[in-house]
Length: 353
Image (cartoon, rainbow, N blue to C red; front, side, top):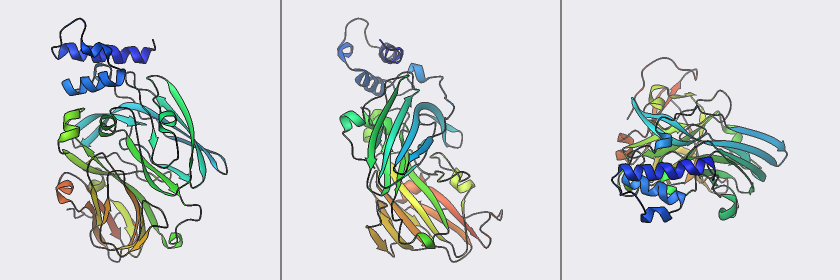
């Protein structure tokens, strides 16, 4: 028996005993490992034993272009504490120690050679890229604890796509933090590429009661949040929390045309993406250049939905970025774009919603 699988079995059984299950034979003994985790989550919404004191240092995403149409992507699944609200930490199941995970950027027509190293000592994990054509039962299959899996698939459609762990129960893996965005750049670019002065990525996600499948399924999120992910070295890169993009706003210069790659990774709620103080010049639904709209005020994003939005900032000031479902903005889904004459932070206080 593999070391990681043994941890999974013993931790699941241990939690069952703590919860008052009788010793000896029980229906649980016939469950598969994923079902044992599900049973443990339902009975005891706390960190399972192998995760309890685990806080793995984030390991950077590795992307290497090995040919004109071939790219190697290596990611890790790991357990890392994420501060989702000031002073409130969530022992997240993550990709590369980030929640949402790091943004992956490839080109239309690339073959992705994907490697997942599972550093979780207890639970199998996997990768479901919405951007690729694949056989899920094979190409999105589980990687066991302390093991590595490698898969290849083509990314033939441009756009802004969600990725997430696809291991059962999928809701637990996504809600615990295993989600992110993959951008497939169109081979001929966007019609507006030459007009763009600044670009950012924003991801919306939700947080619920810790590791509580019942709350994931039937509850409402305690926090709905935004993060930004670095498109290139030096860009801001944050986790999904209620405060960072208010305390450290994104920046633009008066007159800039700003592009945002936006993705709502859910897992459950719809986003009504809106930037206060402007109107979208161009919107590409799901990030596909063929799905072009002009003059929109708000972009509706289903769970997993993405878009590219572009707008021009004409005056200096604070531009709140929100979901216009304001119960979710109240729970944290607000970022600030600070616009100055120079495009640099002037140190002045910002206005939020």
